[in-house]
Image (cartoon, rainbow over all chains, first blue to last red; front, top):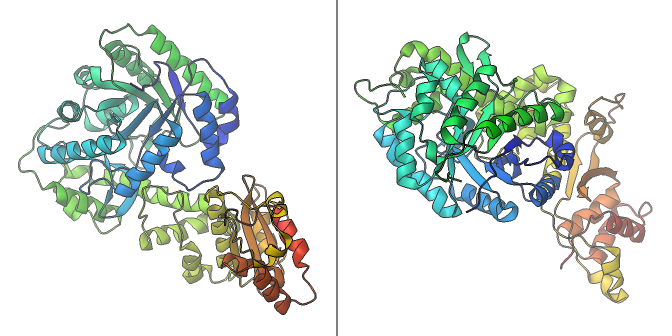
Length: 283
Length: 260
């Protein structure tokens, strides 16, 4: 089974292509949004060929809208498939979110209510994605800003999705921190209840307080340094899951490559300190 | 995550209500889905994210337009485009196909009548950059052909080639405004200009064309033979074109398609 190594990786930004390609760091791997590579040709695709030759890759989708009303877009799945054939990624992932409705794409990860009806649809869509791509997909827990009416917990929603689709999970520790802060929940209780054995990858990132509402509302911007609370939650999560691939995400205010490398080395130290777990993980 | 709260609205209604909120058509229907209607002010996060994603995609796709107008002018112009043409694709790589005509009709941009021509050049750059990597015709391949077969050869142009007929002679201004640090602004000449944009060895190139050269490439792009293209070019521009030299130059810079 293809899977990422239990090491730390970096989100790949075009401004770092040259440095990242040449860095040759022990155990490094890279993650990209496949949507940014859905073009007919050109140099960007050739850069990714060079990365695929040297490092494990992860394709982390943001546009499949698995939590939406519409069935997964066949054209979009076709382009996903082309990228998988070309780059042979070690892992592929998507979100518990929706991004499009009736043909209009909002390009943001919008919230799915934890309801039985939404679960039925989500399970169907995850199955379609996995069957079409002939790969296991890792599903990421979302950053949530408003509480939607629901008839189950997000944790139960994820447990049932794993049980009924065989998907893995991408545990985003920053999202746990942001959502629990915004909804008044306990992040430790959330991590304790998370389906640990299904975790195939972990994300950490920075967040920022909302410009208008201040500390009441944290936003998952991937635009600031990772806070100490999130580093602590990473240690806590790794103690539950055992060593797992950990990704540093940074999408705005992108710092120099060396700053991301420093974060990556710290994440690697967290992985190295995690106790081994018996169960083989997803991914 | 929150515990059950009374009657659940239908999920179908949630997505439609959310879409209405995101497109600025009011939050009323969405409030019924919130555990705490007091959190309605948080919906701005989603509205801002969605608008920003579209505006920043357009800014990245139209850097010279953004440079000329300034970001504060560009953002509301882009926001209006997003409202009129919301993305129909999960990938924003080629979003903004109709932006040049939007700019042409955007009232506050009327004082910059050449701006749509700048937008057309930015768009041509983007399309050339992402065009498929199809093989191009080489001088070596031509050398393999019997010389008397050349006049009937109809190679077509390379997949990345974009031929533009602009209302203003803005090619030099456009090039200057693609730089991170803008060069001194060249002046904009009156009258139309014809420009070739294409990708060669991974890098997008561009050049202003004489009417004869434009006619030559335009005919080749439409499937004409070299002989027909030469006739069209020399009819328009009898003195100013050396077809053999132009063809040879185009072969060296990957302008023609291989494989016919």
